[in-house]
Amino acid sequence: MSTVPEILAARRARAADIRRNALRMVHHADASHIGSSLSIADILAHLYGGVLRVDPSAPEDPQRDRLIVSKGHAAAGVYSALAGAGFFPLEWLARYCDDGFVLAGHVTRKGVPGVELSTGSLGHGLPVAVGMAFALRDRQPVPRVFALLSDGECDEGTTWESALIAARYALDNLVLIIDYNKIQSLGRVEDVLPLEPLADKWRAFGWAVREAQGHDHADLAAAFEALPYGAGKPSLLIAHTVKGKGVDYMENTVRWHYKSPNDEQLAEALRQIDSAEEGSR
Image (cartoon, rainbow, N blue to C red; front, side, top):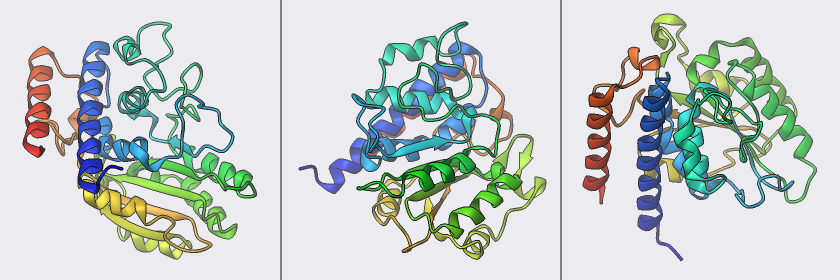
């Protein structure tokens, strides 16, 4: 049996791999949204490193946990996590966004094992997750449904309508994770449409809420271990993250929501990821 330090070390290494692969994929495709993939890499490393009850050899197992990544623009990070977990060959990543290939620029279910829902039109992930959690709650054991949202999706009315429904039906098999990197599309959240006090708003809607540092692996592990956060209530984890985490020139900047690294920038980004991983050992 692995010790806690060994588990955390494995998840840090998994997160580094997600970041490296996502960087290479976006560079290859000259695609966007690398900042969003980097901000959720540590969260994905925990989910696919042991939190989700899933089996890559049986991706349609009816008793599996479900994960809906509503922020579908972070596709490079999601595909990297799935490949690293064994849902499909790592070689697929080299064809990200190639014409006619299954790994499209937004998370796509068709032909991609492990993907529960095609996403990208923001605000739709939580409504579907609520429906799934409601439909699955009478199974034994009860599968859990996780939904990973961007903070910008908390601007959407469908998100708050779904929050009310989840609380009304006491969906304690539903877990929402908000990637709270505080930057959306064209600006900082506080300048576009302020969300604070975010945790208090969700509590007022009937949710059990916990906050964590989204790049602190011990903090994330403790938060996932504590699920569910309240009896008869859906759970929300607000993960405080940094857009572009792991690459200093990408961190906390709006421009890397859309830019793709050139050859020199890619090499420097990979060097930083390698250096940080080496320093954490």
